[in-house]
Image 1 (tube, rainbow, N blue to C red):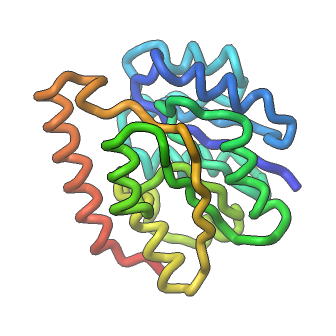
Image 2 (tube, rainbow, N blue to C red):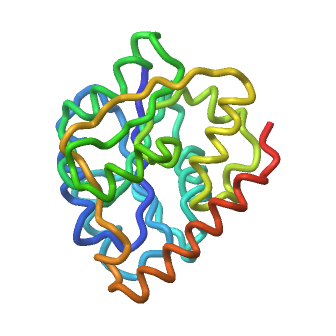
Length: 211
């Protein structure tokens, strides 16, 4: 059973190496695809130290489009989705996401942060469906239309499909993990504007017709 990790990344040169260093230590992951989503920094160059499967998009098309692009380069049975800015990711976290799907105990999993940082822990307790850390059978994700246009609403669109088709999602607690907030990456003002844009895309995704 082949496993592909897809990691969408936009200007993550300072953070992506730690994520890739963890994932490359796992023999259970057969392929790692990094999709540099219109990055203007050295994200792609750094990713190539860890994997030959690096896709560079000329323009930023959003998270949903980046993931679907990566998926088109994979023939895996199971897809592992990880954010590029994770802090504290370990091999145990990755295995916890993958093993229920590999062993047939679940069709898909979603990772929920805990004991990381207050804000990110709180956000995922309020809205666990927004988590970008997932494992899912590729046959399942390929059935969902419209994911490529959802951008930051990707997780909601995916959640809507799973819910409407009565496909249970196994929640996996990821202890001690968090991610870098937009305000930390861009500064308070630009980070705030980016967050507003992200939430707007999420709200639009709630109305996307996924079937």
